[in-house]
Image (cartoon, rainbow, N blue to C red; front, side, top):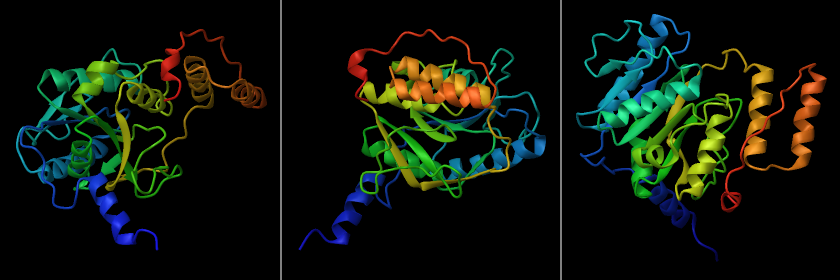
Length: 273
């Protein structure tokens, strides 16, 4: 007979860090909340959820970086406001917050999208998954309900690419990769970041214990920006011609004109990633 289900269960437990694993006391987590066009109530709800998740990590020294100048959450001393007057999109906002976080001594940054509410145990679960990979992992949370299921391997929890709705990033990844590509949209920037990270020796992991709720009623992404970002990603990673034609066809069908995009390709040795 083949291996038992208990055998596979133990492998999965190991990949996630085990149920009883504690977080290294030297770990310091910064949670980035770039609240774009959010109300005070939405910001307060996000801060409350993140504060619970940080409490569950189990030690002091963690903090929240709020990318706005609104006064929500002023009662929580862990909240630090970073006014982002120059940031034009989500990639720039996260890059600025990450730079601030790591300059303040954080070992890990958790990117949280403006419409995401994490489960109270989610951040600790992501840290445990990261620790199994010696903190050389980008760890993505799993939505409770989503129009885009997270396509992870059921045994290793490996991912083909990542999104940035709820993502744990270790300091080394930011230092070695330099952050997100600011020319890419929110829907595309994580794909490029994850592929680059894998080329630098990081692994991409899903953490099914890191659950989060996402507002599915948010306005869908603007079609032209998404197609332009897709075209840029394709050029950057020397994608197949048929996909280029497909993007052009979608633009033509929608009556959109896409700009000519000239971008340097990543090194050839990165292509397998």
